[in-house]
Image (tube, each protein chain N blue to C red):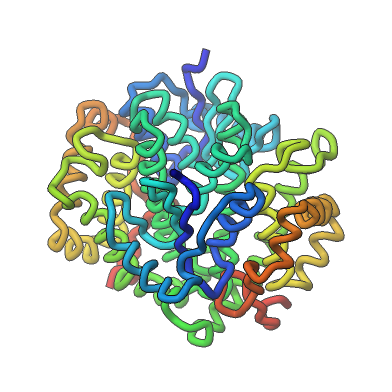
Length: 237
Length: 237
């Protein structure tokens, strides 16, 4: 039996695990968020070290006998299992390409507050963070968001990145927009004024019944200062 | 007709395109490295802007009617087409997971010399590069390389990451080892002394007839100071 899936991720942040959670929720899948149970973090740490296919880092997903790591890879799997990706090979590769581009943006968003080392505190790399964030706000957010906005607008306006049907990349783009709004509200206000397609996509995903129910539930961890998207006003100049 | 493939990537560096080139060479595929021909860079720039599936950045591969972007995604495709990945779904996902972990390492290697902004010169971010590279050498290279070495050693020594058969992830790991040797020779000497499995993997890939022929050919661009892996002695302390 493949379900219930077991998701292994840090229990107190959205982080990279949130891209998986959103797909599981939209799929209506039966899953356990292992580390959010009592003693779950120990299970997470232990699971990192064992098995034929150990992950370099969380999140990873146990699906029956299989353990699958790397967010985009987990979504590749879930997309096929739950109709969150096209069935044709070109379509499957295209949605995966979009997901990998989102993953690049997520890494860059993380590095705005940790440009030197993940293991150091933000306070130990503030001057560097300020320089990196300035470039992120000035050049990277507009470039990434402009790219996705063009996909939503051309050759004609569409509801989701691939057309009428939602895919896991839409859920992830929703999450990135939410995260950037939290971390860089000033920058995102400008970007969304220029690209209303992004606001439309965000609103459509948020209104999907299963996503709306999830966002209103205690399963959705609020954004906070330990995740990938953090609000340091000095970085959102 | 899918072949000849057309690879679109910067003509003067190995860069991210090299992971694709190595897979194409090992596969014995018929391909054109478009931008290395006269006027090819213009074709590359133009191709970024058109089509149903525009890429955010090079490299991307045209395979007949399909255009596929993102290195790991291109390798997912080529792996299936040319037997550079297992045929079973768990195997396909596992080798892809390894590739995505390599991609994370590649991004971190790039950011050692560009911790602030890709569009700035190294000379404009040297103090930050020095801090970031110090962490990369001290904690990140050992963590990533230790992970791959363990996979090559456990539960018993194996020739390639998945066992007896080479996969695209092996070719990419070879490339990362070569790149780290170029950029961080002191750090890599220590790492390989501790993890001879990595040297073994590197040597096995380099000795594969098609790879050996490629490496000896003018098609292999030498490492240089414009690529992802750059030799700045001050960063290899």
